[in-house]
Image (cartoon, rainbow, N blue to C red; front, side, top):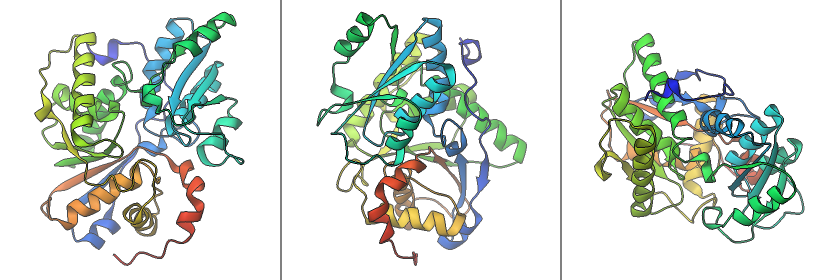
Length: 333
């Protein structure tokens, strides 16, 4: 089956731009750096989940759902994009978020409120481990028809968004006469990296796709990636064989843990803002860019090679880290 044959809603502003980062390339003395701007997809400041939601929301409507339920951290970009998609489609959104309700809402959490989502707090329970069936049953008892969108929108339906994203990127590269030896992205729930790897196999991309883990050790993330990839292949009947060697993961940049802003992320955020005028987020793209900067410093890439950084969005989360970032000096890298 081709992804073009699977029901999809057009929610994203596509294709997203593919831009040269000439100033950053010059500052770092190579390799040639480009950026895929999936922070420009739309849905209340955009992000990578919008591509996944095009397929998931189509599936929800096909099942006649009137409510979508999803999970995430307090500053979840995924939850915010889901709330925006629900508002656009006239659906209710119930967000199950990790932590306790803060005294003041900022960043993505403020946008969740503006978008009309119902927010429920999970305490210290990780969103990926909660049993959501009691919530789903409660909603059904209220006469609603809920549809569950998984943590990170990463299941065999959501993955389709990044299979299509790979096709889109390869068409842009051909049109612009550019090449790509590597792709670098933040990897967590797995759907983005799995989609790109499957898309590479389907559409013939021969470069390397590197996931910078933002929360899991390498072994755990690799297990998540291969399980999701195999589930996707099985569901849609893709003629693809997969093993763990198809996935490249670095877990060297976990720092103090998920959502904890450290000096490498601060430096990366400052450097991108001050060289390219592009904003990264503290949790995902800031950490992934910190990883890319370190890999460049370690001479992982040759000066003539081309590296594409996938900007997966998350700008609103910056405002929830205002205190930490307000002390950021001008970078001297």
